[in-house]
Length: 189
Image (cartoon, rainbow, N blue to C red; front, side):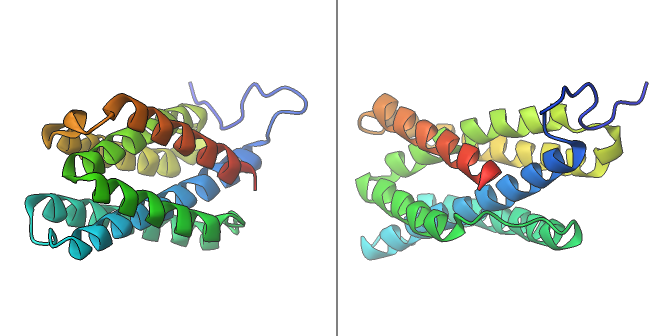
C-alpha cells in the first residue's frame, strides 16, 4: 500500500507541500548550524593550541560530512523553491558560539555538545522520515541516510569520552533544549 505525504491530514494540518517545505527548510538550517558549531570548535581548538589533536581530527571529519549534507539541502531549497529560514544569521552566530564555548571547556565538552545535538537530530530526522510518504521517497531516503551519519557522529563522540565532560547532564540538557527550540523556530520562520 502506498502512503502519501500528509495523508490523513485534518483541516488546518500542514499540507503535503507545507510538510516538504518545512523538512527542507529546517534541515538546511540544521546542517548549516552544525557546520558553524564545528567551525567554532575548531577555532577554539586552534586558539588553545589543540588543533593537531585527535579531537580536532574527529571534528574535521564530522564537519566534512555536515558540509556535504548542507550542500544537498542548499540544492533542494533551490530545486523545490523553498524559502530558507529567516533565522540563518542567528544560527550562524549561535552555532559558532556554542561550538567555541564547548571546545574551550575541553575536548570532552566539545564531544558532549556533539552527543546532545546529534541525539536531538536523530529524533527529529526519524520523525521526518515517518512523516514523508512514498511520494517523497527520495527526500525520505536522504533524511534517513543523513540520520545514520548523525548517529555515527554521536557514537564517535561517546567513544571519545563525552560523558566525562564537566557537568555532562546539565550541559547536554541545555544543548538539547536549545536544539529543539532551533528546530521548532526554523520550521516556521
